[in-house]
Length: 238
Image (cartoon, rainbow, N blue to C red; front, side):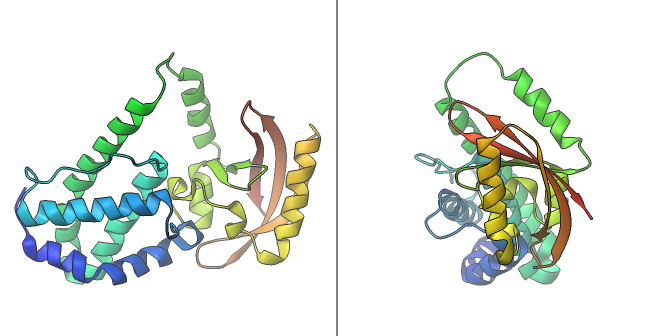
């Protein structure tokens, strides 16, 4: 990799502006202060600046102790890089070109570390098959922790509707994408689905990252696991 100390200086000096652009892009999905994903971004920025100053062979990604969601972290790093490219203006392609191999190396290191922490067992082929099927659904799919309201999974259609990368939404309070006036009504549905097994249907609205309200029709069912109760949503725009 070519050493580019001036690019490292640009990323450091314009950090505040880059973070602001990223926050605007992500809306409610932007990581909050003190979150695990914020620490991942901090580590990546440090690694990228060091690599650009002294060369890729000198800098090593520091990922020890990180406990962030791997998929969300990857999406946020990609979003930060795109924000940096936007701030760079005419130098956008140079920023993308310089950051691309660093992103791959950092994410691969993070993935290997995360995989090493997982308990060994049989391949989760069934789960992968289910995820692949959900990704092909044209309607919006959301899997939400019924106790906390946190988004546990979603399909690409959900990201397209809300204007943010699907993986960037993982772990985010789904009510961040719901108009405030409807929060109570959504909690009523969460409570109802945990108490009964019947499918529930209701009309509501979602709010994308720009704040635009989108009228939707929701179908909600319950899925109980050993650790949590999930509310599974199929959402269609009206």
